[in-house]
Every structure is written in structure tokens, then in C-alpha cells.
Image (cartoon, rainbow, N blue to C red; front, side, top):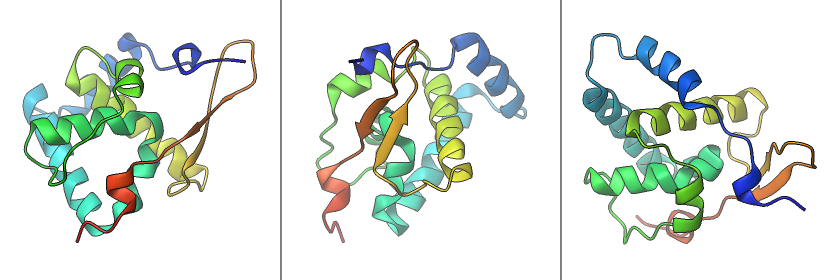
Length: 138
């Protein structure tokens, strides 16, 4: 049986090419800031929105906390964070966005169940659950 560490993720070269096209004259810092502000608004409007990020949620949540955009205690799953983030925040944001778009296209945007691809094995089943998000934070 596969582990989370064995799941397939986009390469940094692939993500860099997409990011470079998405910057639209902004710095990487501004790009990340703009994206996180949008996520914070969506999370405030609908708390189960986080599920669409699947294994990227801990990295996104960590970035929201670092940027003062998350208003709960901010517990983060460090094991998943260490696997599903990149050395550059902008690449993490691009990877999370691509994953979220795939979930939208598959009609699974708010589903907590995720099938992560693994080389030469059955998909890794990942369950996205964040107690802070699932409880009423209003």
C-alpha cells in the first residue's frame, strides 16, 4: 500500500512555467498575497471551501496564518504540510490552485475524499479534515 510521500505531484519546472504566466506583471510576493486574500474571503464565506485543496490545505492554511489572514488557532497537519508544499510559496499556491481546479472539473469541489495518484499502485486515499474549519467559527 502506498503512502502519502509516494503520491505524484507536479514538478517545480511545470509549476514555474505556469506561475510565470500568471504573474501578469506582479512580483511573486504580490501574486501570493493576492491569492491568499481571495482564499481568506472564500473561507470566511464557506468554511468547507478548504476541502477543495485536499492535501494542499495544510500548506495554504500555514500561508494564511503567516500572512495574518486566518483567525482561528491555526493547527496545521505538519506531516501533510511537509509533503505537499514547495520551497517557493508561489509554487505551492500554483500547485494548490491546479489541484482545486481539477476538483472543480471533476464535480468534487466540496468532497473531503481525495484519490491521489501514485506510480505503479492504486491511488492513495486521502481524507481532508480540519476540525477548525468543520466547527462553527462564526
